[in-house]
Image: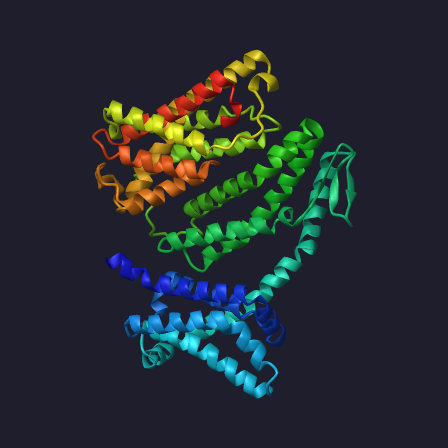
Length: 514
């Protein structure tokens, strides 16, 4: 039960944030009035302070000197919850009743209520005297975190309101590059619209480039934390500058490519395919190149850091899935009305399955046929019940007959033979076991506790449009994987489910299932 105790601090923080959220939503008129009187976003300040505290704790744990240990009190927990419920019910009545009193009296009453709320929450952790000891020990970083949390909302507001000027720089660079590449370009700086007489785009907030810079910054922050023992600080912080510049340049190239595709190839592919997927493609490639730079450059790594090859046990389990996801993005980027390039997805997955065929083959055993087939059929039936019919296009309508036949064949083979192996390796072969133990390869196939099964199935469901069907399928495949035969059972059951769907598509022309 140690893991439950370790969750108590997060549970109390979640309790506090949830209470504030429900209190403010249920008393929206009071919140509006308080914001008018006190023009400080206290709620956002609190969230920022918690985020800064967690980051400080994770990145520089030595700053957290040892203080008194928490002594949780169920008594004060009950008092706090009862007081909160009473405040929730009577908040609007109290506020509108005292606001017409003398301002000093009103301030005293509201301060008292807020004080009781906070003090009872603090007493759940430990006595107030111990909190004072904590404050004296941790005072320096607490003051810094408070300062950052007070400035953060103003910085965020300025950033969100200044996108137009940032988009102007992106517009100018894109226009200059288009002019260099093409003669017949048109541009309207006032409306931030540019392109050609055949295809015009408008640079909106998401196209200005700052979202990509934010995503790259988050990725690099996670990378530097994971590799903090090998990289050189503060030199490694230059990666943020390089990443921001690279992300912005790649975004300009993305906009240029969008105009070129829309003008020279197909407006449908540009808008429905490339526009929606190119951002993720550029982010992924930029992130990979930046991490490669950090791993190989002598400027960012300690000279004593080991450079020998490192074994990643999870690589055979996860790389085929990552390859198929990349294939999905590429196929969608080249899509107009019909997903003509679906073949990229199973092809990339198959390439990585062949690359890691030896460790994958060693992981598989002879499956249990009857239970695997039964689970596969049951999952198919449940999936069909939850699937919602949508408008679809027959490949024989979108493509010539020969190309359509090849497309259907590849779709069947990919869905029945490649995709089940790829997804089961990642979710039942790796994630289900990794949630139980860091050395996932030592976890026996028969081990599938409820929490690990549920979490891995939720992740599996998130990969599918039919989310609930994916979760149910994940649970079923996880359970059959605990039988003798292990992961092979899950792969076979998954293949049977996909085969049943393919047969329904072919026999009943239910193309919406694909």
